[in-house]
Amino acid sequence: MSGRGGRTGVGCLALVLGCLFLLYGIYRGEPLTVEKKSNMICLECIGIG
Image (cartoon, rainbow, N blue to C red; front, side, top):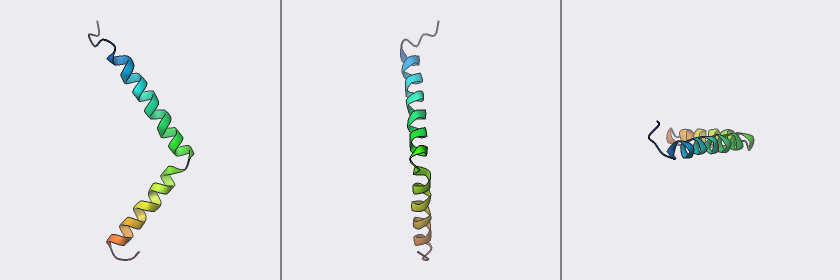
């Protein structure tokens, strides 16, 4: 009765895959890298860095 065909399975797969990539990025320390880059850009905008 969903009327969506096979799209629900694809959506669930995309969600799981996205979560796995998010966790992998956290494991690799990507949030720290992004924070460092954003801080440098911010400091360069206001003329300190």
